[in-house]
Image (cartoon, rainbow, N blue to C red; front, top):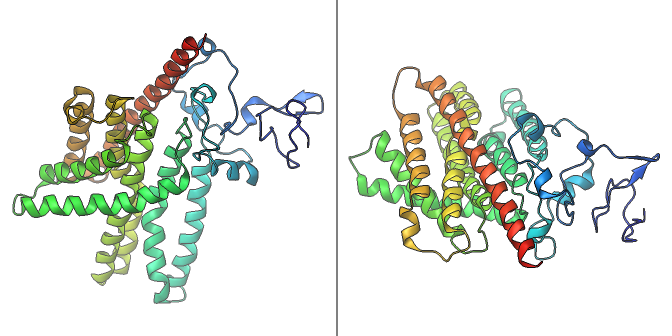
Length: 357
């Protein structure tokens, strides 16, 4: 299929040109705007800035989850973030992305988990147990991470880099947390746990984003979510193994079920908030230790520590109702920072366009 705009030869079945983003017309009618996959890589949004809105409309954010998407659309997602596919700031759209791949990833993980569950529960094959724990531990954190990745409007971080951060960042943050716990020794309580684990994740996240390559608020959200996803998955795998070694197989499934349900509002969201807050302070400036004492960063970090401490407190009703409330509260702040990140992109585009005129 040859594009009438740039004469690029596209594969059959595509809805837009892979080179210039031109939408194709079928049956003399333009393709429904809402049916199009959120444009990545090369698509230049031509709608004037003042006619667009970055206000959160949740029904629109998730409007494409249940639509049909081709394999080509999924494949295009995984090519962004390289030197050749990262768009210029003028090509980045500051309207709310409409992610959908995260839902497919969750379905795939659920199918894999059910298959492993059948292997363990019905066929009594212990060889399926490690896979059951691994898939059960990573399913929801990875799904949540894919959501953050799709929401990263600058599209400047490759997926292989995210996987690297998940494993290296997750392990590194856990080791730093263990170091803090070793220092605290007998002073372990919900408050010190919150401080130690969130500080460990913050140090790890800042290690990855302190270079100005990842200078956007949305970059901080994504890198933070990757570190948090690794931390959450490894921790869940550990708790699941402990439950299994206790001799109660039912406790294994209960542990993974509840930690999966609550995973989006725990380590993943908290680390994402920390990363976004730091990138918001750093901006285009080189790293400076004083940035860690900036009010915009400290407010978010203290909020995250308090949420973590409350999460671990043995308060009547905290599990699960209090933790569900904290999860919702975390995501309210997440969406506020996503909105701030999209506005940041809009302002950078406006300044860049004003400078070249």
